[in-house]
Amino acid sequence: MPKVLIMSDSHGLKEEVLDIKKRHEHEVDAMIHCGDSELPLESEELAGFYYAKGNCDFEPGMENEQVFDVGGVTFLVVHGHLHQVKSTLMPLSYRAEEVGAQIACFGHSHNVGAEKVNGKLFINPGSSRLPRDREEATYAILEWNDEQDMHLQYFHVNGKPMSDLQLTTSIAAKE
Image (cartoon, rainbow, N blue to C red; front, top):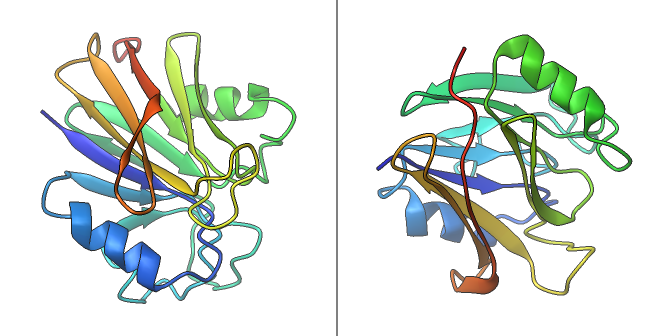
């Protein structure tokens, strides 16, 4: 069963990012950070992460987006500031369509959320430092058996699963 760790908007945190990474790195197939870590890309904390440059990241080697496959599913990772995610998912939806992504992961708003649009799953893991829509700092893990059985679980930064933040859904098959 493929499994992916998703986090975002850690804004300078080192110890907490490293704790989350160490807690899950041996049980996941990929680790995603949706930007605004404010850490060097070569830092120990970000080693092994697919990383998208955020509006508070200023390192020249960082990419604005990453597209990759895990377990037969195509992911698009962005921060979201270049896609107006605070007001709509439409530009991000168009970009996901352009690159053939089935799942788009983003941050920027610091709001926890998951939404399915036209068979694609859009995931915001919230902020691991400065949450805006709830008081708990969060990250998420997505795991699946196949495209019809996707399970998203949100966690408090201390590793405790958040029982009120989980989703079981499906996504559209690859074209």
